[in-house]
Image (cartoon, rainbow, N blue to C red):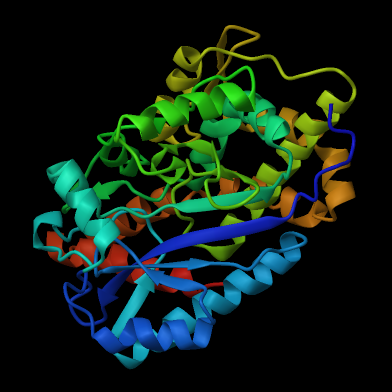
Length: 378
């Protein structure tokens, strides 16, 4: 068993949608110079995404949550400033309130061309954005063991991050509609269970040998061992519109991983529940965020989310101390009291509607809120 504590370094990736400041719709064909300007200013920390209306940033390897916040704030500022010079603005939301996927253009890149050719309409609909958090764990066996245990907490993280209630001008009734789109791809959802890293690699090799994937980066589970870095990568979250929310969730995530490592070090472990049960909570988080609670499997009943969160925060209190993120972790309660981006989007729509705005004006009001919240706290 690994007795050297992992570094628990942090890397955060965020995907943004680019909107026209005048129409508030997605920009279908942004200036080619925009990405180049961003790349020059971000020193390789920004990349184009599948669609031209998307852009992705990734922090450097950060020693702690505070470094992650500083770097992510810097990257958001750069994208906002460069986009603004072109009459555009980034929004950190997992779907756009009204733009249509059929109108979007794809980025000319071999990887994206191959994905679209293979997945067809399932890929062309991917006008969605997410937040991925890498936690540095350089031991292969430990990554698999923590992945098996961490799966339990994935719905909790999703519930706190929801930012995709609208799709093509309609209130979907879900707080995270993004995952209904992403789940149409293969190799998505709750990760499989593996007894060892060797078993995991054997399964990956079968897919590679059959010519189905080139490497493990084509495994798109909600949580996976990174195919590029010695990290465990959590991918279930919607992208958080507010920077404060992104950092609070990141703090919670890394504290949970350290708590699970402590259990392992003491020859204990979190109880492993079947993917069938975890998928039920995943669906509840997609549908309700935290409004209707999640199932506490040990109790066998739905429990209010605030109660579950209090339990988790109690479990990871010493980990927050050790990782120096007590304040950031405590701020996760603010998300529950204030509401996720999805809650705020729906509220903005309702307020505009109550003021007598047209349907189009209501949806534009949601975009205005997203633009403002994306820049908040920078």
